[in-house]
Image (cartoon, one colour):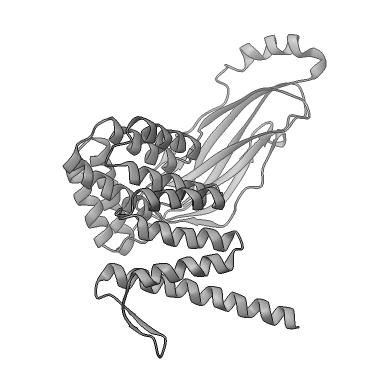
Length: 349
């Protein structure tokens, strides 16, 4: 049977002509508990804001607010319908996603705007109607991720590392996989180097990014780089800074420059190959195809073990890492060449 999770909006509207009078009237009414609030986290579904007040706004204004619906459990949730309900639902405007299936670790974001049509307190609720598919098979792997996260939050980083490692070995395929891959090396290093203030800054930066606050994450990374320029986490922080700029903000030029800074200043870092690959992606996105090809060729050359110049044949070095980056570079080069061929065909036609 379908279930529901509800998030309430509570706010007031005013007209510009009577700001003072209605501000006074709304300040009392806005605190009344006349809207029922259901729990904002049921089973593994979470709504980021369960009781949100837009404050006092002008009639006819448009005030958006972002909401996030996350699957933080081990089950799968088909979302049957997301709607705005309540006495003043017409005062809230949104293009709500429909027909979504949230696998473990998935999340969706959407805006709900307050656009009041009249004066006084305006109440409505966000109604999420969903079903539950109990986790079986690979979904049960997700329980390892949440066990690891619980250990991490309790400060037991050794146990958290062990569980993240088991989670990844078990064949995790959801969005939580990337989170575990970022956390595992940090927690493993903490067992060796300790958990000083530099660790705290970096871990909090990762948590902020995971929560969607990428600006706060970048500020924490910059603070780490300023305050702990000799930390073992400097290359981690530089890589994550550039990664956020590229993946989350789409600022490919700044990301490219910061990846280059990492490569220049930390040539022995384990992030160098990933930084080079990311630079190639960034140049591709910027439309600099020749530069992207040059970067992917250099990455491929770093991991070439055998080369037959006469036939232009190359084979990777005999280790997993080299085979990985050799193949990934080759895939990108083939994709760039295919785009080049398509572009030439379009020009000819």
